[in-house]
Image (tube, rainbow, N blue to C red):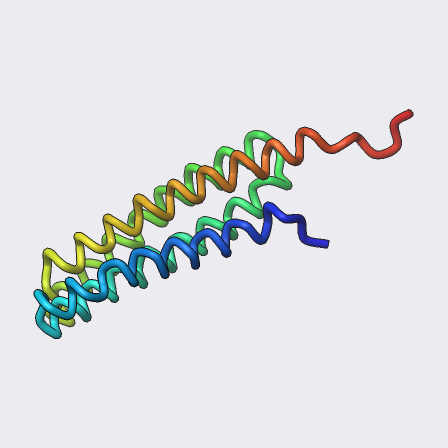
Length: 137
């Protein structure tokens, strides 16, 4: 059975995404052209994919030994950053998206999602540590 903290990451990502997109909707409609809006959305999607991959890696890492945990977390972080950089380059060079809108939104959402990932990870780790050990007593 999933705990409250396991659902909280997805819920927090969706709520924060919706909040930022709603706040940005009016200024984007007024001040940005179509290419910049598409670039902004693509940057958001790249960061969203990165956040959910990070979520899955955290879930995998929590059930591993300390050494494996560190390899999954830090190795996964490096691979995810590399994946984002390659995907952003492809979107810039091949799709011809707007550089500032794409990279700016990817960076904005990356910061938001990594903050939520850290919060989730910390909450999840605390909940695992506070559970009574099974078979004791």
